[in-house]
Amino acid sequence: MIDRELNVLFLPKWYPSKFEEFDGNFIENHALALSKKCRLGVIFVHSNSELSKNFAVKKTEQHGFPEYRVYYKKPQLGLSIFNQVASFFRYRKAQTIGYKAYLKDIGKPDLCHVHINGRSALLANFLKTAENIPFLITEHWSGYTAESGAFKGYFRKKFYQYTAKQSSGITCVSNYLKEAIKRHGIKANFSIVPNVVNTELFQPKLDKANNPIRVIYISNITKRPKNIHLIVKALNKVGIQRKDFEIDILGAGPDEAFMLEALENGSMKGRYTFYGEVEIEKVAALLQNADFLLLYSQFETQSVVMVEAFASGVPVLISGVGGIPEYMNEERGLLLEPNSAQTLEKGILTMLDDYKKYDQEQLRNYAVANFGEARIQEQFLQLYHKALEEHA
Image 1: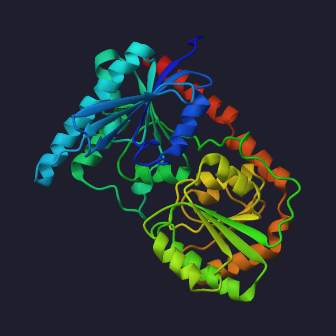
Image 2: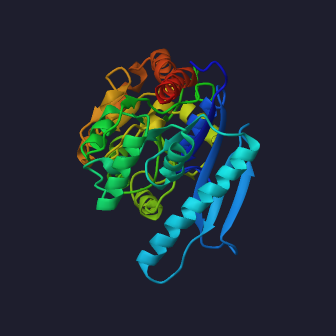
Image 3: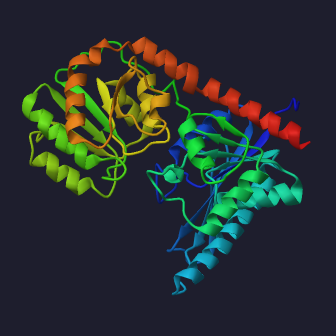
C-alpha cells in the first residue's frame, strides 16, 4: 500500500471550457472532490477553428489544482476523412503538449484517470506502455445504450475494447450503464461509482413555504433526449387545471425557442421563469427553494441534478429510465413511465398534491451517505490503490 499522497492525472473527454462553460461539470466535480485527497491535475483537449496557430495552452488553478486546456486548430482540409485523420493527430499532439506542462509543474503521475473512453484515453494508453503508468476509466456516456444508439463504427469499437482491456478497470455511474457497455463486447473489471454532489453547497431550506408552489426543471433544453416538447405540453395541460404553481427553468439547448413559444402561447404564460445557464451557486439557491424537481428524459445513465435535489431535501418527479430506478424509490419522489405527455400530466398533478409528504432530512441523509464527497473519495482511492498494487 502506497502511504503517500497520490499524483493523479485526469484525462476527460468533456470538461468546462470557453466553448461549453458547463460541459462535463460532473467530471469537474469529481476532480474537485479528489483534489482534496490527491495531487491532481487535468489535461483537457478541444478543437478551435479560430486559432491563428496550431496549438494553444491555457493553464488555470482556480480550484486549487492545475487545469491545462489545450486547444488545437480545427483542420479544414476539404474532405471529411482528411479532417478526421488530421484531427486525430492534432488531438494526440495536444495531449503531449499538455503532459509536458503537467510534468514540469507536478511531476510524473502515479496513475491516469480517463473520463469517457475514446480519444481522451490516447495518452493513458501511451503512458501505460511507455512508462508503466496504470489508468482507470470512468464512464458517463449514454451513447452505449440501446435507446441512444450513438456507439457506432467498427474501428471505434475495437479501440474502446482495446483500451478497456489495457485499463485497470472501468467505473460506471449506474449498473444500467455497465450492462450497456458490456453488450458491446467491452470487457474490464467493472465497479459502480456514482456522480458526486457538493453537500456543503446543496443543502435543504428548512423554513420553505412557497405560495405558489415552485416546480424546477434543470437540464438541457432538447426534445431528444430530454423530452422538452412533452414537458411543455403537460405543463400547459396542468396549468389549465391548477393555478397554484409556477416553474423555474434552468438550462440551454437547441429547442429553447420552441419551448418559450409553447409556454407563452399556453396556460403557463406569466407563470414560468427561464434563467438559461447559470452558475452552480445560483442553481443551488433556486433548487433549495423548489418544492419538487421535474425531469422527463428518454434515457439517463444517472442524473446529477436528481442527486443535487436529494441533497437539497427536494423530491423528484422523473421518468423511470436507464439508471434512474437504481437511485429512486417512493421515499424520494415519483417514477413515471417515459414518453407520454398524458402520464407526465398526471404525475405533475400528483406531485402538486403530495410534495409535502417527502422527508427533507431523509432525502438529505441518503445523498450524503451515497453521493457526498467523503463517500466518492473513499471509493476512488480504494480503486486507485488497488490498480497500483496490481500493477506493481
